[in-house]
Length: 228
Ligand code: DX5
Ligand code: ZN
Image (cartoon, rainbow, N blue to C red; front, side):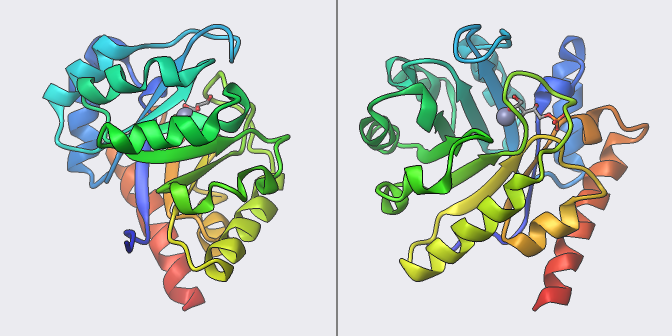
């Protein structure tokens, strides 16, 4: 499987929920490839966000693939329902389940793409035994739970390690980064090996979110063409 080289994934957590349909159409028209949806349970992370009914509503409002980031304990209990509601990609935290292998297998069984997520304090090596069983590895560059936090730079080294592992083991998962991604760091992240860039604040709190989406995409694409 070969993946698109650069995908911008606006995180709706930073959008205006009272106008969610309009917000989504705006970033879709601006060229975003994916929509990132943050699900929080108040246990795995100290915040509560949205759940299955919102995913189902988004499914009707957009054609974009829904990238559902489960920040919930025991995610395997809800995988089937999120996929039935319209999730195309389901991402589960390594730290949130003692049965990561099973959770990833369930996601693929129910017909979605499987992603494994690691928090800032979790080393890449925790995923070495599931490398061939994931479509995406998501590196958190903030501690999950809130939008608008400062980027934690140890993500760069983890992304480089993942890119090296991907080449060494001849596997083809996407590398995704989430938290504090903006116009300042996106080029460096692209050079480190990221394919999918989640961006909340830097898109939805920009004075022109459509322009911000296009600029992020352009900077990432340009950084790669210079590298090549
Ligand atoms: C944080 C969420 C992120 C968040 C990113 O727990 O997983 O997806 O929305 O927001 P920004 O881009 O503002 O850091
Ligand atoms: Zn997220």
